[in-house]
Image (cartoon, rainbow, N blue to C red; front, side, top):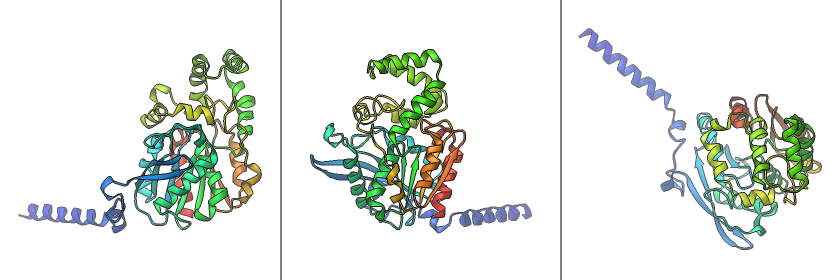
Length: 339
């Protein structure tokens, strides 16, 4: 009888502990009961008005925090939000509300397949319409833009920072010409000489879409500077985002690969270094030691904005959210909690 009472007491104590662990704010974290996306688990399809008509983009909310709402702007252009799924391992336990969002022409969103929409201004206005539809404002709205998403975040902030709480620019410099110079003068020479010679020969002939050219870059450049893992071991969210790339959109705006921007790509002359001092909201820039982007330039960017800070990922590359994950997400969360 004494054993039974002891066992019963232990069970009651355990139940009491479990009840204490589930705080009210935790039980409400995934509460969609008052959301217009209640029946879709946070998924919301947003109509976007453009000069060519109305098209739908896909978003999905995770979490519930009225003061911290992070909109994830994926790279490419033309990749998908899938590679941000690493955030699921960090943001929920830190009570960060965040939104997956496939930009128009990408992933689960409509693809008008019209080059007239493939420009920075169109994407900026799209983000503004997404913000309004999600009811984000200056009290809670944070952009986390990675790579091309960083360009989009900077451009959005320069026009609409009065609607924002903060900006995070991840693995993106403030100047494409500087990025190209870094790729050609610093990272390129680190390749095996014979490989670099072949790459330069293809570029001299402007044979940018040749499978051999792309194959050389993917084999020798990407595992060093895009994601520092054996390509056979790249995480599934990354593989899906790359497999679902809208390559015509990527080719038009970025060029054929991450080895700089070549040809007549839309972004080739993009440079906002002289305008960064106009950004007054709290801004975190993230650089990585082995990135395709110069980490020194990323640190300098944090000093050019008026209220900046810098996060360095010493083990990371362009996808530092995977190959230096602890540093990356812990740093982002620390920044969000400091706001």
